[in-house]
Structures are given as C-alpha cells and as structure tokens.
Length: 375
Image (tube, rainbow, N blue to C red; front, side, top):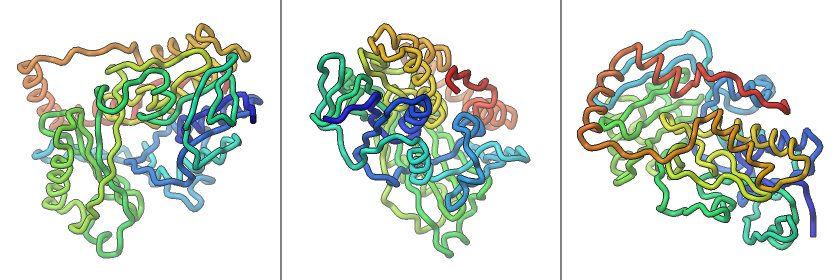
C-alpha cells in the first residue's frame, strides 16, 4: 500500500493550490480526481489581479498557447432595462478557459497525480485515512466541489437537502459566421440581473470563445429561465442566432447558507466543497484559492499533528476572511418585494453599478491581500 503526507481529492484551482503550497514546503502530496486533465469545465471563467498575485502567475508564460483575455470594462443591466457600460481603461480581470487554467495549475503543483480515478472507499484506521484500499495518508483535503465525496463523508447532505444556487451554461468556439453576429465585445463581459434579483445571466467572450449562462438561488424551472435569457440576447442581437442548445448544469452553496462541517480529525474542506462561493457573484475561484492557502498555513503549523483541535485555526481564518457562517432567515414577502424594487432602481444607476456591483461584488477591489504565513 502506498503512503503520502497529504491526499487531496479534487484537482481544481483549490486542490492544485493546496498541493502547490504543501509540495513547496516539502510534503509528499497526491492529488486524486475522477477526471483526466485537461477536462471540460464550463465556467464564465475570469480571474482578477488578486488571483494572479496569490498564485504568483507569470502571465506571459500562461498566455503561451492558452486563452488569456484582458477585460477592461463590463456591461451591466437588469433584464428589461437599458445596459450601463463601465470602462476602467486597464485590465481589471482576465478571461480564462477552465479546461486550460485548471490543467496548468495542476501540472505546476508538482504533486503526484492520480487522475481518472474516483474515490470509491474511505475509512479511518490508526490516525490515518485508507483510500481505495491502496493509499494511506494522515491528512485528507476535500477539494472536489459541491458534490465532493469527502464532504459527504464528513456529513454533508448532498442531493437536494442543501440550499444551493444552480446554474446552466455553455462555452463554445464561434465559427466565422457566429463571430460576425456576436456583439459581445472581447474586453467587455455582459451581466444581466433577473427582474426578481434572485440570479443573473452573463455573456462573456474570450477571444473566439463565447460563454453564456444563468444562475439562480431559486432554481425552480431553471431551464425555462435560461431559454428565455438566450431568446432575449438573440432579440437584442448580442449573441449569434445559432447558439448550441446543450447547456451544462452545476450547483454551489452560498457561504452563509446550510453550513457544512469543515474540519474533522485528519480532514478539512476547501473551496466549493466548503461552500465558499461569494454570495453576490457566485464566484468560486478566488475563495477556493484563498481557502487552500489558509488551509496550507494551518497544516504546516500543525507539524504532522492533524487532530481536529490542531485544525481549528482553519475555521477561524475562514471566518476572519469570509465572515462568520450562519444560516440566514428568509425575508418576508413584503420585504422581499421592497428589496427588489429598490434593487432594480439601484442597478439602473452608474454609481451603484460600478462601485457596488462591479468593484465590490465581482472584482473585490477593496479586499485586502491575503496574509498567508507560508507564502
């Protein structure tokens, strides 16, 4: 039976970042993922300069043979209202394709990779985890997204028992005819908020690739919302008329809702597995990366003692960075309608669109750099 210092289940940005940090500190790390890489991962897909800095990315190296689309502005609107274009005059984010981005980070991590292998069995024995009856590790990191099997093992009730945001989206390479019909500018992603403010849709162009999608807190009849959104974009002439109709679905938790058990003896969760998506935008890349770095700090400080008490500082660091976890009560109908009316008015103003929607919710411009003790 093989042995390693840490097993990470999930090879996305969170898993690869944790592997990168721990491997640089001298640990023997194995990443297990049921997919082979590069793998399809549909995502609106942009990274802010904070992600670039946290990962110490060499953008010149990354863009060699990969999509790296600078975004210098955004177009925002509430469906049915006129759009507002906000120009920054410099790159404030970069469009990436997740199939390329995730593969790049995973290869860069230097970890041992066990890809194309699902986690089929997991048990605790003598302060170690036994995985698939073939690998032993004292530390287990769940980085497998919303449906992470490690989260399930720690007690997460998957499959409808949790309050989630559901989304459907598609990304495809446009042909010459579609490129001529697409009015979404390469440097300006477009965001469209639902009239009830329970979600938003997007159209993001990354070179010749176009990503279209919509996500909602209330995922009832989500396909109908997505279909109506695409029809709206076509009527407005924003996207080609012959967009493929095979949309992919995914789900994620909002940080304050249905909190999961984050740590246990010899185990912890990061990224979407821990429900760390930002509530307003649903973005999961930056929280996944930052939670991986915080987890790595705590792991290295534990010096091989991974009892639950030694991992508790990880929960404290998450609370300090992302806020306290608590289940929020749903507002009453009258309050909800009032919030919607006010919200639609605010979304129609340039100040709110730039300083709140974009700077605060989507770009996290005011968020201080993460202080990682092991950087």
